Length: 240
Image (cartoon, rainbow, N blue to C red; front, side):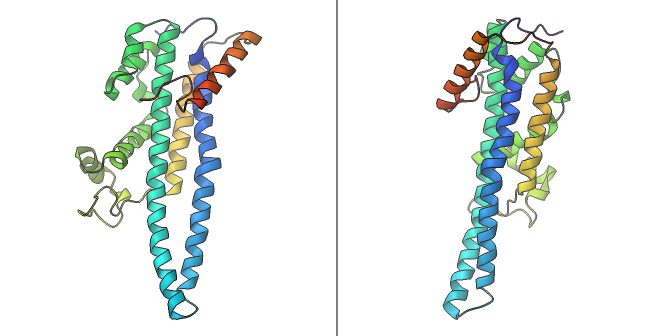
């Protein structure tokens, strides 16, 4: 059974911060970017059906470039969401362990092997992370992030067999197999963000009721959030 940190705890506030980051990243970055590029793509398609030969040619070229931009943008956003999720999870385990304290779990939160980090979470919380809402989808996000970051390898080979929908035109063995024919739709990024929210809300509900924070606690929390954002790290976490 889990023993939660008593009194003021950085870890207590992290679930809400982590799922709000995912929501706001979609609202302020992902969705506006997709809207802009799709509008541009529509204008290029119009250019290929009207005007002189030069206009048609430039429109066709612009369409090809913009379609590739959509693919590259999807890959970049997948990496961003996955990195934010992983940093948030590691940062949460780190903060929870420090607040107890639990030196072994704190060290494990910084380990490179992902199973070591999840095992530390399981031990701290007294639950199996794989059983929590949204985790199956987040496990897929981790695998996609690996493919987008590293390209060809065993993870990509397995993913192409288990999730062929990300390669709707079939697997291409070309200049960069992970990107050739790879499609990650905007709605899938929303699915990942919803899974992040479901996961962290479940964690949030595990915490016992707490008294209202003091003004000193609120000031400390605000300072730590501001420092973490300025440092470019996950909230209360570190870069890995």
